[in-house]
Structures are given as C-alpha cells and as structure tokens.
Image (cartoon, rainbow, N blue to C red; front, side, top):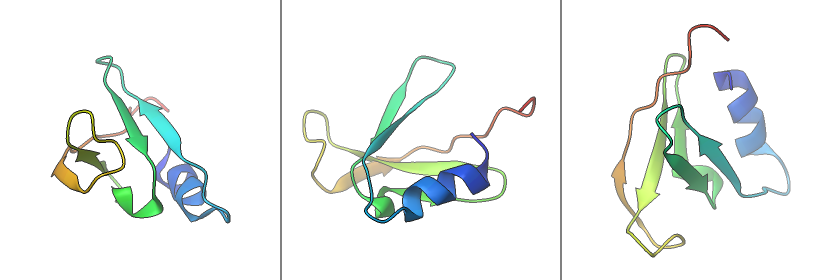
Length: 69
C-alpha cells in the first residue's frame, strides 16, 4: 500500500479499523487513526501491549513499503 493510500484510510470519516499484513507474516492493527504515522518512505504503526489491542501503544515499528509497488 502506498503512503497516499494509507493516509486516505486513516482519514476516512467515519474511521474503520484495519489491518496491515507485511511480508514477514506480521500483522499490525489500527483501531484508531492516531495509531500510525505515515511518512513518504515508511509507515510507523503503534503496537499496543500483547493481549491489549485497544490499550495505549507500548512500542512502534518502522515499516518500509515494497519498492516494487
């Protein structure tokens, strides 16, 4: 997914939770639009604590988009 496309999903009204699946098999869920930072060359999803998907973010992960898309 390109950064522009992800921004459209995050800014949708009303916001609808979604998942991002990455090539290493990891899955990141966004339950709120502020759970991801979108930059031109990467996306930084916030990761809540294990077993606590709707709780405050405990860490962030840097994801780079696939250069082939």
